[in-house]
Length: 403
Image (cartoon, rainbow, N blue to C red; front, side, top):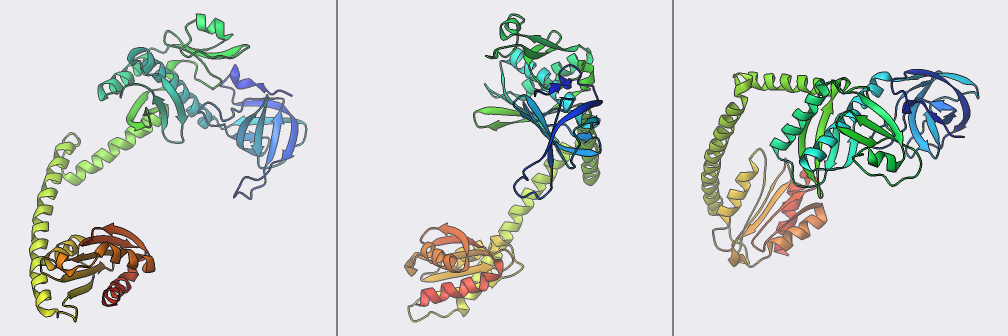
């Protein structure tokens, strides 16, 4: 039996009564032990997941609606308690539904503007828990394009244009100027935003553009061959703007400046950081050179005429290890086997005259103690899976060289 879809003609219906046609235990989802039942009603205002819009939540009697999905001509309601085959009072989670209506109607409006004004058709839509996205096909939308589309959408929102439901065949809708042609038989449902949009859609929408509230475009990124635009509507846009401004004020307080001066303050701080990092690196390099000289003096040459320096460091910057290894291996027939216990970074380096293969040596060590890395014959770098294996890695490298 087909389920009558009450939301098709009245998306604002919050409560209704219906007759339970069937109630059967649902097969548990993978990794979920919760016992659920699937219920079919003779009519419903609950929207099933479809077309990028998530399903509604709410109650059927005292049972909580966990999910809603389309099953041929019927709609299955997944609930957490069994229901008798009788009349039942049903209630939607209205704040969730209205939020979805705002986002979905905003998507129709934004997609229409991108297509008609910038020749950027929408190829997919996703209504997420926090962010909504549309994927556009065509040239990359510039910041000016994104800003212009947002401004145009909000102008139409403030004009409070009616949003209505139309029915007609694909041919009839085509004659009315539908945005996207649909090759489907029978009577189709379409959403019209006066003077802007006519699009086949089975989703739920607000009654006028003013009820979208406002629309904010958040950004754009490359997704395969398309451009993904993030946007928010209604209360989501309001809450996001409030959070953003609060964050901006906190950052401004940290910098000791006005919110409008944050960018210049951040630029100065980054410039100072880069300058200080260069000074710090220069000091580390000089320190590494001095330590290397002392180490070379105190390290004996072995029976193979090699000077092998092995060391596990603690509480030193990783950059120091690189400088130290480089300085050591400026000396002929010297090999440096270094590791850092805090993070498991390892450096194996040699002067070319040592005639070993540091990359092969590192590979042998990592096969035993675990980790990833690589490099050249004279310089290899890796990271141990377990940093506490730093000393074991260095000891093993020394044994392999001695073997």
